[in-house]
Length: 125
Image (tube, rainbow, N blue to C red; front, top):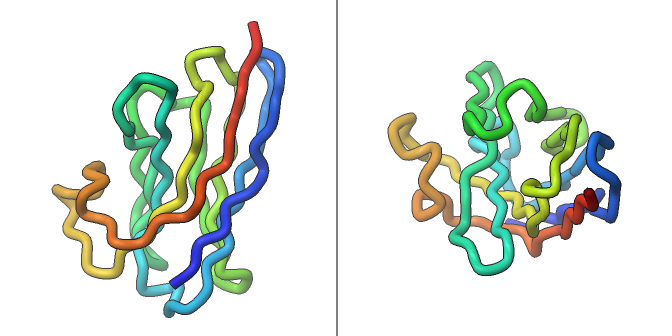
């Protein structure tokens, strides 16, 4: 399984970015896909997840109303649309995938077996 994240960059507060994660080597429609982030000096944090095709989406309260996760099974890609970015959103964002994750563990990074290389998002004030 390979996960290739892209779309990060340096933006001003209030701007938008869309992160993409292209997945290969897996049956995409059967995997839960997620995004986590890690800011300098901080622990890794759950951002959002989308269950396998037909399932629901889950978003951290800290980004609710600003970030949206979606998936395109035709492209084997998961997206994270980030609007109203704040300096505290600055972090490396990681794409994750897991086939058999249970709902109670969807926010736990330890439950995911596959991780992408990360893409850096920097939000200036």
